[in-house]
Each structure stands twice: as C-alpha cells, then as structure tokens.
Length: 606
Image 1 (tube, helix red, strand yellow):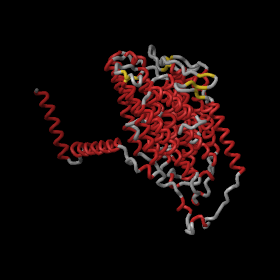
Image 2 (cartoon, rainbow, N blue to C red):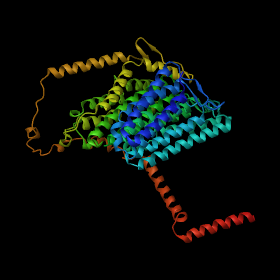
Image 3 (cartoon, one colour):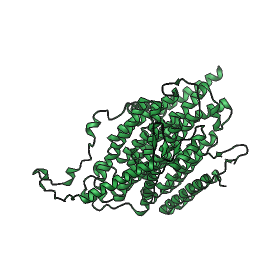
Image 4 (cartoon, helix red, strand yellow):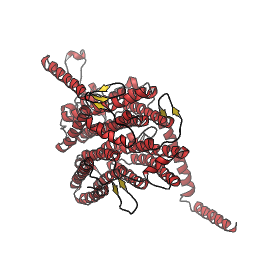
C-alpha cells in the first residue's frame, strides 16, 4: 500500500531539496524536478491501477485529509504525467530565470498542490491545496521576467478562490460539515448558490468565458515550460471543480424537455459554447504562436464544459477523453513552439519561416498535435470530439451544436497558421544555423505524440477508465463492442479509421515518389514575370494570414472592453484613496488623525 500524504509530502520535500541544490547548481536542481515528477507519476500510475493506494488518510484524528477515487486518480495521473513531460525542458530554460532555485521549488510545490486537490476528502483540504497551486503557479509566471501577467492571473485567481471559499463556508453553515459529500445534500436556493460559486471557481481556473482573458496574457508571456504545464496540467483543475459542481449538486430548477436537461446545466453549456466561439475567433487573429495556443486552450475548455453540462454517459466520457487528449496535444504543441523559441528567441509567426528544414522532428510533433486539436483521425482529439458531437446531436442542442462544429473547423484554421508560416514558410537567412531540438527535449516530444496517437487508435483503456470514473457519479458505462464505440447515432471503430488513414498516407507517398519531382530554381527565374527579387523576406506570407476573415468581427470582444473599463475605474478609485489617505502632505495626515480621534471620542460619549 502507498498513501497519498506520502506522495504529497515527498514532492514538497523534493521541492525543498531542489531549491537547496539550485542555489549553487541550478541545472542540477532542474534535473531533480525530472526525477521527482517521474517518481510521482510512477507511484500514482502503478499503485493507482493496482488499487494499492490507501483509501483514506487520517493524519489528524477523526479528520480525513485525503481519499482515493477513480475520479481523482484519473486527473492526478494525467496532470502528473504532464508535469513529468514538461520537466525535461527545465534544464535548458533554467539559465534564463532570475531566480532559478525558486522556479524548481515552486514547480514541484505546484505538482504537490494538484495531487492534494484531486485526492482531497473535504473542503478544507481542497481549498488549502487549491491555494497552494494558485500561489506557486503565480510565482512561476514572473520568472520569465514579465511581471504584468502575474497581476492578471492573480486577479482572476482571486475571484475563483473567493468564490470557492464562500461556497465552502456557506455549505458548512447549512450542513455543519466540511466533507465534500455535504454538497450533495444541499437543496433549493442553497444548492443553487453553491452550484454557481463552484462553477465560477471552475470557470476562472479553466479559463472559460468570461474569465478566459488571463490565458493569452499569462501563457503568452510565461516561461515556455510554465505555459505548457498551465495548458496541459494546471488548467485542468478548473475541469475538476466543474465536474464537482455540476454532477454532485442538484438544485431545484426548471427542466427543459426539449434538450433533456436542467436549466442551470443548459446555461453552463451555453457558456461553454461561447467560450469555444470566442476562443476560436481570437486565436485566428494571433501572430504570437503561444498566444494562439492559449486561446486554443480556452476554446477546448469550452468543449469540456459543454460535455460535462449535458451529463450523460457518452458526454461525460467525451469530457474525460477530451481532458486527456487535449492535455497531450496542447502540451506537445506548446513544447514544439518552446523548441522554436529556444533556438530562434522568438515566437512571432511573422518573424519565422522554413523551420521544417532545421527542425523536422519538431515539425512532425506540431503537425500531429494540431491534427489531434482539430479533431482529425487518427489522433486522440478525434475520439473525444466525436463523443461530444454525438452527445450534442442526441440532445438536439442546435446552438451548442453549431458552436462545437464551428470551433472544430476554426481550430484547424488557427493551428494551421503556425504550420504553414512558421514551419513551412520560406526559409529566412538569419536562421541559417538553427538546429533541431536537443536530445533531452526530444524525449517528451516523441512520448506525447505517441501517446496522442495511441489513444486515437486504441481507445479501449481510456474508455474503461472513464466508465469507472462516471460510475462514481451514478452513470452507466459507455458501451463498446467488437466493432468499436457505440454512440447515440452510430458506432465508431478507431482502428479501422486509423487503418484507412494510414493506407491513404501510403498511397500518397507512393504517388509522390513515382511522379516527376519539381526542380529547384533561382530567385531570378522568370516565374516572377520579369520582376526582380532582391530579398527573400519579401516572399514571406505569414503576416495578415486570415485578414479577409478577421475583418468580419471586432479585434477585441465586448468582455475585454468591459474589463478595460473596470480597470480604469479601479485605477481612478486607487488614485482617489492615494490622494486622500496616502499623501506626503503633513496637513492632510493631521486632518485625518484629528477626524479619527474626534469620532472615537464621540463614540465614547454616545
């Protein structure tokens, strides 16, 4: 048997050890993050799959801190695996951080915090470890020397934290218990209030509308490994909280016969649909590859919310599958861009081109990642989106169906932009000496790609695990037969689809090698109709990639303008208080002292 508290405490101690070592040897400390995250993932996977994790942990008498469940184990294995994969990049980026020792400490503390959240048995444990994740991840962001995104992250995280704290205290005031199961006994308006508060906490962490604006600011400016671990790992805490709120609380509400779900769940689905559309439209506009992928993360979070809100066996399986598929694909895509950034010192698509000639492996990793993110066979994203589409169609949710299909088509548009311009674009002379990813970076790139491919071809194991998870919430299993997954409107056989796609690739390859090859020509060839070309950069076509489409909608959504207005009003209020309460003028200070003393004396007289 292996206990959860030992995993958490060991990870925290490993973080302290990495900090001490990193004071003198930062790179060695970063290697310790690899070993520690490997140990955490291995222990959770081995003992979890073999049912050898302690069911309950009582460090304090009559107070259970942690409790194992298939639900928590599923999230813990995925997130710990993402931390492990990203840690391979730490030794290469550690030299760029102002406080490398702090980075290694906070990295492992964030990992420990996520494990504590997923196995928490009560709201106290959940909130404490949730805050550990929030604060440690917040301190990781400015280590990339950009401090402004930290403020944005802090503001939205504070909203989520206070919403959760109020939900915890309100639940305790009603039930007299901090146990997570207490939310299931709430009813009426009390249940609805806690439902909304936990949904807000989940939305804020997941980056769903209207809280999505922190994702591009944070993921776009954070250190590259931090961006990857946010998108693939930390962000999934929001999905975990959303699962709890939607599936464990049953507030009395209007039942919508047309779609077969309660009103509050339908509202969640609509917010998920809005997140998909807004994230897609904003991603299409981005010239920075990291910001583009950040908006993509927001959009994919919308798919997860839609699937959870529908609350059926097939939709919940789709949500669980998409959490895994997106974690693998998004992390692979962010790490591929991290390799490009490491070699070229930029993530601007318009400043790059022809990277396929320098980084063929990185190109293939990014290609396979975007195939999964776009929901195309034979990658894992196809299975998860197929399940979600089946659930949406079965519920006859027209608006949500249009949004999900639009997001899937749009996702191919925006992820194709870095592929076409950054990797396949014209070679630029200034990147002539750029090399492929270092060996250690190649390891997670290859593993993530193979993992995404595996779950896209052989979904049985993930489906079986998901069935165990949704069974804990009282839902029946998603049925499978010898032909594949049984959906609401058909059967999906992933191996057959993968075989057809594989055969298509072989046929195309044969045709390519048989047909005559194109010949290389010089820059002064007559294909330019006699026009002289003096610099290759003039032919680079990555700028304004989708300009005609972008003109159809505003550059900034309405919610961004609302946040800008709120920001300005808060600044005005701050200037007011600064002028009247924090001035350097002695006469103003004396005035406030006299007023306060007068009020105190007056209070005593009354």
